[in-house]
Structure formats: C-alpha cells, structure tokens
Image 1 (tube, rainbow, N blue to C red):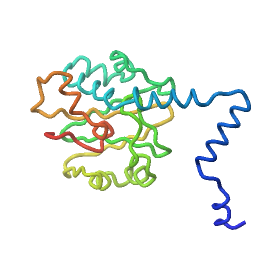
Image 2: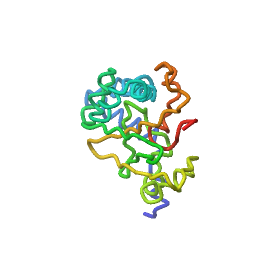
Image 3: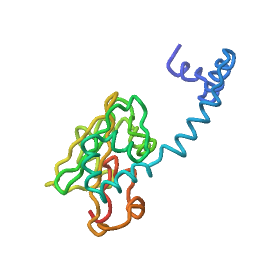
Amino acid sequence: MSQVETQQSIAPVERRVDAMEAALHERGMEPRAFIEEFEHLAEEEWVPRNGARVVAKAWSDPAYRQRLLDNGREAVGELGIAMPRHHRHLVVLENTATIHNVICCTLCSCTAFSLIGLPPGWYKDLEYRARVVRQSRTVLKELGLDLSADVGIRVWDTTADTRYIVLPMQPPATVGWAVEELVALVTKDSMIGAARLAGT
C-alpha cells in the first residue's frame, strides 16, 4: 500500500475519538466524566492568573520572593496553588537587566500548566522547540522580543519531573502598586520568557 493510500485509509480524528469512547464504554468505563473534568481544569483552574499571582506576590514581598527562588513548589503552595504530583520540582528563573531566561520542552510541550495554563500553539511547534535552544536570540526576535547584545540568554529545557516558570522583571513604575494591580500586568508569554513586560 502506498503512503497516499495509507493516509487516505486513516479515519479522521473525530471518528477515532468516537471509536475509542465506544471501546471504553464496552469495558464499563466512562470517559465522558474524565473529559469534562479535564476541560474544567484546563479552562477554569489551570490559568495564567495563577502564575501572575505568584509573580505579583514575589514583586511585592521580598521574603516570599526568596522562598519562591529557594523552593518554588512549596512557595506556590502557600498561595493555595496545587501542582501535579509528577511536577516534583518547580524552578523559578529570575530575569534581570542582564540575564533573560526562556523555557522550552524539546521532547514534547510540557509546562508548569497549573501556573501558566496550557502552552500556546507556538510553544508546541517543533520548530520552536528545536531552534530556541540553538538560536535563542533569533527565535525570540521572531516572537517580537529583540534583546540587546549585552543581555545574556539562558534556555531551560523541561524534564520529566522539573517544571520552570520565569519571574519577569517588574516595571519600575509599578513599584508600590497593590498586588491585584500587579497581577493584571503579568502575561503568559512573560512567564515563559518569550516576552518582556512593558516598561522593563
């Protein structure tokens, strides 16, 4: 059978999903409840606002910031944010005027999703995953972040049990703002390291 014939014989994804659900039903399993629970988590609980709360707290509370850098997983737990059991380590990467951190997952598209939400499409793209490690400055520029030559870039690759989140620099004009005002400034891309916040 040719490659074209093989591709034409593969059922569309919707039919394959239906077939999998039917097979699970036949074995007494109920996939719909799991799917609904996952959709709830992804849409209602795994949201970038969680990470933004962590960042805003770190900006406004130096003692918390130090605990966050020392043990990220424990520190986010202080804010009532749970991480999956297999995310055994959360490493918080602090950006400075001379060091910019960016995260990726060269194997698939893992992130600290309970903090920053599900990964954006470009993060999952094979080209980003392959190139950001070797051509980080170029890739970031293509994403809209043009860093000067005197800023060093560090790329961090997610592992099976370690997740990363970037602590972006706080815009100087926002020092002294209320935490809720700070939360509104923080973006998903800034917590991945693909963007800097305005004013930094």
